[in-house]
Image (spheres, helix red, strand yellow):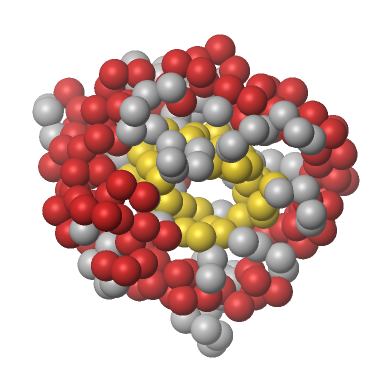
Length: 250
């Protein structure tokens, strides 16, 4: 059985005081209620040590929203895997569509980040997904294949199952629109087939999330699909009640 992972991607939201209030409200709601699901919070860098400390011993992980592939150096504004570990992170989101669109994140950069994260013991959450235009042109499979082939190119077969892949159709992120359960499951199934082409055992173990306007009202249907192993939650993750409800749905 693949253990579902529900991750809260706060993006550029919440001060440290707000992060503390969120964790203090969320953790009692999850105590004994998460069942077999795993939960993680992905706060801004400044709140990462605080969130990691507050969640210690709770079973809730703390993940960063990005990292650089170099160990150190003249990379102003960047953080390394070692710095994330020092801050208490257990994982890192890589390749979110907003990073690709607004900050020039490339497939080549991701292919260098994935093995560095894995070697450091960080769980990488690799984001992939198509734009509205690409879906309308019937290019979803082509886009997913290109993104995954590039990002996973330097990942050894033995480590494939340690990657978490988040399928996030760009047209559903922050728009209120959600892929239907069938659309989401089809895409996640295609992703699993791509992994299976490299390693069948890894494909059975790898966790594939769905992300894109996930909320309490649609979580159970999405998370009940055969190839969806969790969710990367944006807007709904900013409210502890909503996030706890999505975790419970898993």
